[in-house]
Length: 79
Image 1 (cartoon, rainbow, N blue to C red):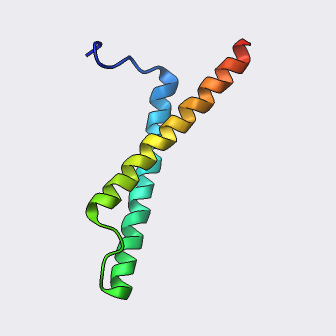
Image 2: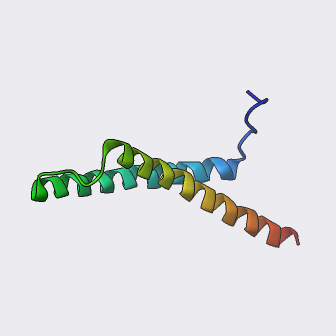
Image 3: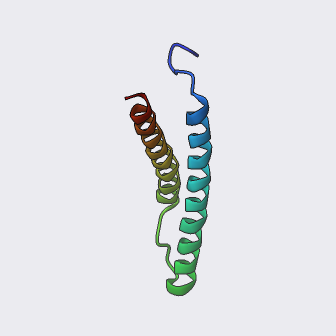
């Protein structure tokens, strides 16, 4: 698998775990909002695919933001 993917550092692994947690809670909030909207208006606010994308994008985005912040912090220490 080394051909396609680089090995993640310890910091990147921890950031991905944090991103997964943010994505999971985003899923829960989106599902709660969708269900609450259904109870009030008898139609859904988001499609299933939209909820899936919202959680997935949240996880990857938060992981990316943390990795960029960590890289900037390492660059300041080195310089």
